[in-house]
Amino acid sequence: MDQRRFLLALVLMFALLFVYEQLFVRPYRRPPAPVPEAGQAPPPAQRPEAQPQPPASEAPVGLGAPTTADTPTVTVDTDVLRATITTMGARLKSLELKDFRQTVARDSPLLDLVTPSQVLPMTAELGNGTNDAAVLYAASVPSLELHGPQEGEVVFTAKQPDGTVLEKRYRFPGNSYLFDVEVAAPTAGSRVGLVLTPISDQGASGGRTSGHEVAIALSEGKVIEKPADKMVQPTEVQNPVWAGFSAQYFAAVAVPAEPTSTAWLATSDGLAVTRLDVPATQGRGRFQAFFGPKERNILNAAGHELDRLLDFGWFWFIALPLLWGLRFLYHFIPNYGVSIILLTALVKLATAPLTTTSFRNMKAMQKLQPEMQRLRERYKDDQTTLQKEVMELYKRHHVNPLSGCLPMLLQLPIFVGLYNALMHAIDLRHAPFVLWINDLAAPDRLPIGFNIPGIGNGIPVLVVLMGISMLLQQWMTPQQGDPTQQRMMMIMPVVFTFISLNFPSGLVLYWLVNNLLTMGQQWFMLRSADGGAGKK
Image 1 (tube, one colour):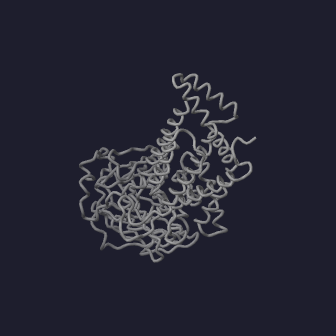
Image 2: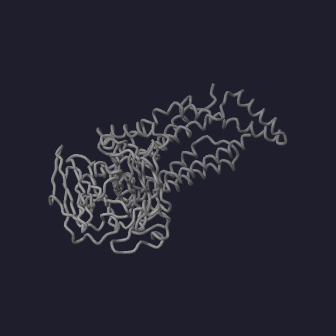
Image 3: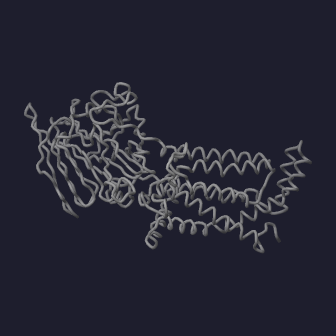
C-alpha cells in the first residue's frame, strides 16, 4: 500500500506540474504573431481567404487603408497619455502611456499601445459592408492639451460624394485612461461598429511583445478569451459589457453605451480584430474606450467591471492579500526584491508550526522504515494483511503517514497565488532588484554574450540556485521508502528547475528564499533537543 501511495502521489505531482505548465507558463512563451507592415500582404497562414469568416454583413471587412504617413494628425496630450489620431479614418495612429516605457532603459521611448499595421484601432464600420478606413476627415482642432479634470473634444467630419456627412467625435479627460468615442450613423436605424486591434506590450516578460495577448470580452458575468494569434473561427458575443484585447499588463477595450450590442472576435485583412456593434441611438453609436494598464485601482476607478481584466485564478483569495502585502512592504523599503524576501519570511513564519509538525512526523516515518521493510518481506504475498499490519504500526507509534504531504499541499496554493500576483502585478514590470536583475517580472538572465540553446542569452542564476537549494532541501529531508523511491524523489528538483526557467525572477526569488528558510528550519530542528521525531 505504501509503495502504491507513493507512486500515486508522484503521478499526481507530475500531473500538477504538467497542467500548471500548460495553463500558466506556456502561454507566456508563445511568440507573437508576425505583424505585416503597411502595404505588405499578410503571411500565408493569416490570409483572409484561408480562414472562415462571419457572413459578409457581419465580418469586419476591408479595414486596410492607404498609408497614413502623409496625412495630417491631431495630438491629444493628457496627464497619463498622448494620443495621435490620423485624419485618414480618424483612427488611432499611436497611443503612448506617459508612466510606462518600452524597456528598462531610462531613455527608452514611451510605451505605445498601438501596433503598427495596415489596420488601425477606432476604425468605424458604417453598415452595408462599408467603413471609414479610407475616408479623409477634417479635424476641428489641430491638438489638445488637458490636465486634471479638464475635458476636451476633437470632432472629425468628412463630406461624401453623395452628400452624406460622416462624423467621428473623441472626448478625452485630462486624468483618465477612459475616453468617449461617438460615430454618426450614415442612415437612420442602422448599427455602428468600432474596431480594435491587438495592442503592443513591448518589454513584457523579458522583452517579448504581446507574448500573452488575447481577444477578450465580458458577457453575462463570463470572460471569453481567444488567443490573438489563433483566431481561426470567428466568435460572436451577445450583449457584451466590454470587448477588446488584453496583454500581460495592458488592455485596450471598448464599452458600448447600449446593452443590445454584439462583439465579434475575428480576423480582418489577415489580422486579429475585435469589433463592437451597437444600435445607433438618435443617429449615433456611442462607446467608451479604455487604453491603459491593468492596475487594480485604475480598473476599479474606470468602472464597467473592467477589473475583470485581471484574472488571479482559483487562488485569487491568496493572490490579492499577497499582492497587498507586497505593496505595503514596498512603502517602507522601496525595492520589490527586498519586499519579496520579507514577504516570504512572513509567510514562512506563519506556516512554521505546520512545517515543524510535518517534519517530526516524517522523522517518525523514517524510524519505522526497518519495521515496515520486515512487514513487506513477511507478507509479500498477502497485500490485504500487509496493509492492515502497516496501519496498526502507524497507530501504535501515533504516526500520520499523510502529515508529510501537508506542507506541499499548503505551498502549492501559495505558490500559484503568488505566481498569479507577480504575473499581474504591473508594479514589478521593469522593477529592479540588484546587480543584473533589473526586471523582476522577467526571467532572470546573467548576460554572457552568447545564446545557450533553450535558455537564451544569459545564465539563469536564480533558477540554478533555486534548483540547488531544492536538492539540498530534499537531501536534508528525512528519507522514506526504498532507495529507488528516494532516487525518484531527487528527480523532482531537476524537473521543477527546468519548468522554472521562464518564470518571473521575482517568483524564483520567492521560491529560493523559501527553500533557504526551510533548510534553516530543518537544520535547527535536527539539532534542537526536541527536534528528533518520536521522542517521548
